[in-house]
Image (cartoon, rainbow, N blue to C red; front, side, top):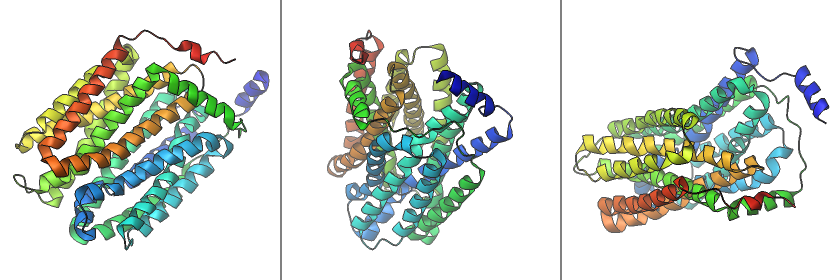
Length: 413
């Protein structure tokens, strides 16, 4: 089997730096990041608009975002069993185009419950890209440039999330949220067509028919590993806190004492560029130091940033938001690497579980914290997130000084 595999690689070498194929892969994988995250968080800056249009409360409006991330989590669980049975590019193209179509339809949703249902289905569709993008890169790109390709994919995720929020809010400010959503759906549909044209087909992927019971067994092992439980909680917590802040920040900034117009509020989402910096710096640090020895400091920075957001001074508020954004992306980068390093077998399944908890944090915290905001105001909202941050800091410190245990779980009999 090994010789056959080696012969196959010799006939079809992986994409190398400066090759035409690698340039096509870089462009294509960047497009996927733009499309997926522009659509997934499209409604986040539009929540005040949805609140007024559908005559609902702020916490109810947040379901427009949570529905998509719940759909993403549900889809990732499904694709954990099915993704290796479907050609990579075919799944990614179908996912982007279907999600774009659902986005366009959602612009005409006559009822908020219909909007929630459409966003859930969109999240399920987009999970098809997330489930296989990194697997495609590891299969098709040379190890010497794999890090560059992955960094470009994550940058596309971040820039897509940022541009989707900024563009949609700017369009909504002048033409209304319906036009903003329809425009984003059309843009992402054409991005999907461009992706289908430029992205190379897999050359090193062979569909797998591994029994589902093996996947379930590995998931059970990972869920019993206390170390991984801690990492899953970190992903759940920092993502939930981050999404909560951005979900409700618009309400805070458009009200006194700030009373900012849409154009200025939209510019706040440019803070996502700080997230790109956070991911890059955390990645470099993790090459020099153990991730578990530095992730606690990012959670501590997250708490500091949240504390600054109590302020009624706009400059201090924005600086605190920068700390929250930088620390989130850095902690997420470190936690992702820790999961992969911990799992000696079934790394893709372990990573899938991490993403599940990650998006569950976005869904559950993103909506539930809206109730805190409604009942206790902005200061109560921030206080709740700080308490969660302190709990997370405790988990990171436990991981920092934790000696590897539970490894007997990975002795497959």
